[in-house]
Length: 156
Image (cartoon, rainbow, N blue to C red):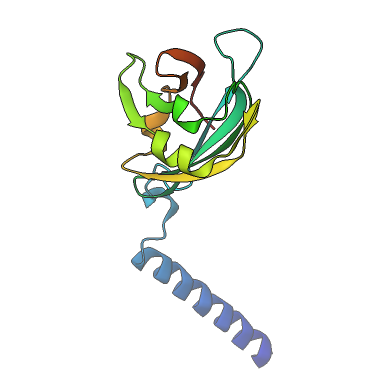
């Protein structure tokens, strides 16, 4: 009988200790604050090549890897007509057409053009968040005047 009483007493003591610890340390469920995700946020855009607002095709992912740092990964599958990298420009534009970020230097340093597409790339850009990019367009131009790709960036 003493064994049963001491087990019950031990259980009650541990239960009280756990509840007190949770209260003191702020682990109460109702006191938890909802924190908006940032690092780890992901967005994407897809260029479709079916003669509708785009001549390039490919898919791109935008991942927030650190505070105000976004990694862009992707590959253009079609739409390149020559292999001179300097003939192409890559920018992110907001809905009014203003450039948010010019990505040309970093992307051109990484890709190899293999007509009709290009190799995959992965570039990190500081000063950006995924939320800055959502709703903006990833635009590709050829010889500074012809838009060959324009895709809206959407958050996952």
